[in-house]
Image 1 (cartoon, rainbow, N blue to C red):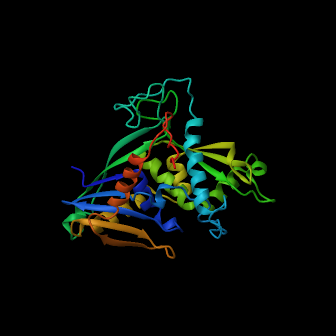
Image 2 (cartoon, one colour):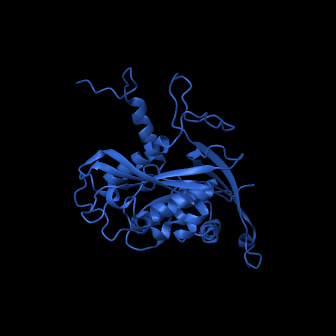
Image 3 (spheres, rainbow, N blue to C red):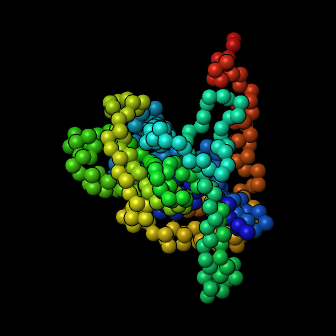
Length: 323
């Protein structure tokens, strides 16, 4: 019987929280002794940061600049969505999962959702037998929805699952760029990315571990022209075994599950309610606030109402308003 329900994205953010420099938030709902951990609608967690932990992170002075944190986040998210489909061998038949794709529209013939799979996994974190509190001594069972991008061809059954991600370069330096350095100095390029994107890589690695992905593929994507954020080149792909890469960046399974267990035990000791976990924007600190039950529900409802009120043209796009 599960006591915690969550997505891999939410759990991975908690695991990598100490690496983060930006502020973000998650919502935990406690009801009848069970926890639901999820992202808030429109939260910054749903995007990807770029060079967040670099010595000179992107400047937010000009928010309309293509190199502002928000624009770079949108660019990185778009690159990752497209890159995860580019690496697939579409000549091979796709592996059928037990359940159909929930995002496939039945009434749209000839159209298909992006390839990928959700795996629902049950993870049990053992308790501490010598703990004074019976709650801390008992094991915690988590049901987590994880995402798998693809599967390595000819892998044994239930093996070979792969997580595919892409790092992006937006402003090559005169003395250092992936075009000149990636082929000859792959290790140095990776070390630089681990330093500049510690939170993002920690988050991706935690997601791969939670999903049971044996392999993590990292693509290196750069802009065709530094002043154009809509056209890109794939310069190379590095393949890592997930556990080996986790050790390389200092992310151990014991520490990962220990962090989750500590937060779960903390919230389980409180009354039923809704709680907001907020990463402090100036310190490496997580703050937890109790919020009203109906908090954040109105944002989703308003968005849904706006979408319902919008008129669509014959191609399914939003029709311009008529004056």
